[in-house]
Image 1 (cartoon, rainbow over the protein chains, first blue to last red):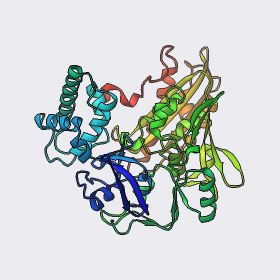
Image 2: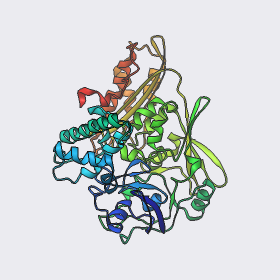
Image 3: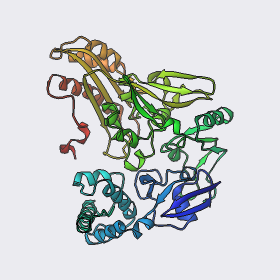
Image 4: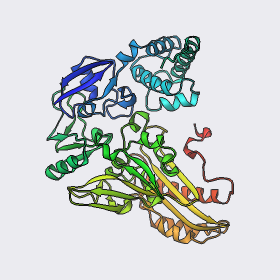
Length: 164
Length: 303
C-alpha cells in the first residue's frame, strides 16, 4: 500500500506492507538509521520516535497506522534548537557511552521538556522509564537532561520564547 | 521494504460501519494500539511481522475515541489510549488511574488501549481488576446488534473471551463507585514495562466502624482475574476492628488457583494476594487514609 506521512517536516510517500514496522520503514526503506532496534518488543525504548507529538515505540507501529501521521525521528530532532542543546548537554554530562540508547533517550527527553521545561529528577526518571541504558547507570543521562533543560530556560528567559 | 511483513488482508477504516462490515465479512482480528499483537506476531529482526489472518486497524475510527461521564457512569471508547485516559483526570475513575499510570511505559501508553488489554484476556491484565471492582460492562457491537456483558463474563479464560465472530469491542461502561476507600497495588519486577506478577484492586464502603460492602479483585492468581467473593461475603457487615483473619484468609483462598510461570511462583502469588487483602483492611481502620494515596508501589522507600 502507499503510505503518505510527514517525516521531519517533509512530506513523504512510500510503498510499504501494512504490517511493516515503522522502525524498518525508517531504517531500511528511508535510510534513517538513527532510530535503533534493541528488543523489538517495545521494552527498551531504543526505537522511540514521535508520532503527532507523542512518544511511540516504532517497533510496535505498523506502517498502515503511520499513514497521515507527522513523524519526528532523532534526525529531525538533531536539526532543531532543542536537539542541539540536548546533544551538547549529553556530551558535556557524559550521558553517552556506547550511544545505542541515546536517540531514544533524547526523544523521551524532548517529549518531557516540551510539556515540562523545568522537571524534577523524579519526573525525568519517570519520563525515561521506558528507555533502557546498559552503560551509564542513568545518572549522567539525568544530568544531561537537567543541563539541557536549564540552558533552554535561560535562553527562553533572555529572548522570551520557548525552545521545546 | 523489509520483505515479508504481511497479513492476509487489512483495512484501516474511519467509520464504525466500515469496520463492522469488514470484520463480519473477513473475520479480521481487531487491532487497536497493537502493543500486544505486534509482539506476539513479530519475526526475528529483518524477517517482518507476519499475521496469518486479516487485520482490522481501529485507531482511525473516530466514534471509538470518546471518554465521558454520563450521570453515574463513565463511558470509555475502545479507541481511547492509556495516555488519553490519564489526560482525562476529571473523568477517569481513581482506581483506573492508578492502574493505567503503571502500565508499560510512556511510549506504549500513547498507543495501548484498555479494550486491547481486556481483549488480550491475560490473567495479568492490569486494567481488569479495577474494572471488576467497578462491575464494569464491556460494550460489544456487531452489524446486527449491540450487547453488554459484565467484564467478568466477557473473559472466559487465559486469552479467551466471549467476543463473537462478527463483534467488535466498542467501549466500556464503568459505573461510578459510591464514596468509599480504594486500593490498588501492582507487584512486578520493576516499575516500568514489567508484566505483573500480581495486581489487586479493592473498594470498601464504610458505615461507621463497619464494612457495609467490600469488593476485592486480584489478577494473575487464576485463569482470569477473580473477585474474592467468599472473602467479600465474610466482610460484609463486619466490624473493621474485629475481623477473624484466619477465617477470612481461608475464604480468600477459595477463589484463587495461582500457578508457577516465568514471572513468579504459585506460593508467592498466593501469599501476596492474601497480603494485599490484609493490607487493604489494615488501611480501613485509619480514618485519615483512603488506602495508599499514591500507588504504594511508587513509595519513595521502595525506589
